[in-house]
Amino acid sequence: MSLVKYAEVLGMTQSAVSHAMANLEKELGFTLFHRSRGGLTLTNEGRSMLVSIRKVLHYDEQVQQEAAKITGLMKGTVKVGTFTSVSSTWLPEIIKSMEQSYPHIRIELIEGDYEAIDRWILNGKLDCGFINVDSSSHFDVIPLKKDRLRCIVSTDHPFSKRSEISVQELKDIPFIMPTYGGYHEVKDLFAKAEIQPNIRFELMAEDSIKSMVAHNFGVSILPELLLETIPKNCVVMPLKEESYRTLGLAMKFNLSPAAKRFVEITEKWLVSFY
Image (cartoon, rainbow, N blue to C red):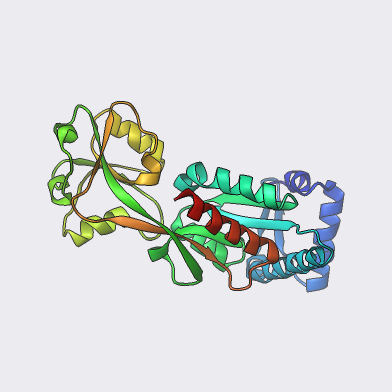
């Protein structure tokens, strides 16, 4: 990204950002950024400093929030990691509840897969994030919901008339595999059944998976949260094997006051919803 773009994001002039960068590099005694026509990139020294700088910013945010708490005005920013199924189903209502209870707390959402969210919490980019509970052991994690895995097939597929299906029966038919980083509950399901699926396509976007299934290019397995809306020519059916992912909220050990409020609202909303 160019310096001009960074300045726009920060709401500052280009010269002010450039001056601040130069002062910081002078204070530290080494260069933090490579400057080129292509934009700014971190030097090796800059990458080394990134985690520490994020910690400084985090604690500064905590100080500001504690001060606001003392004066009776809860405010601050909470950075939350999420993925498609949570973003499209839970978060609109959770954020609505947050805005009603704490109108001065700002929520920032950053989407990624399990692996990315785990990494971003670890390096300080996020305060908390929704994950598969089995995907991480680095943080405090609050289990929130067991999200069952379901098979999705086209209405033109021979399996569409079935009431349920076994993983074993998926062994030789074309399969549309969801793909993402980190723990993978669908691949784990096949591994436990000692099956090598006949993968026709590997896709990251869940809507693309549903579309491929709807056009009868193969079947797939997706969590229920992603199947609340499906194409009209698709059928969702249970798996004979008990299979699910456990969704949870992973968080830093030293949450800011604003982040604690987000966690509380999330737990409260899910209890009332389910």
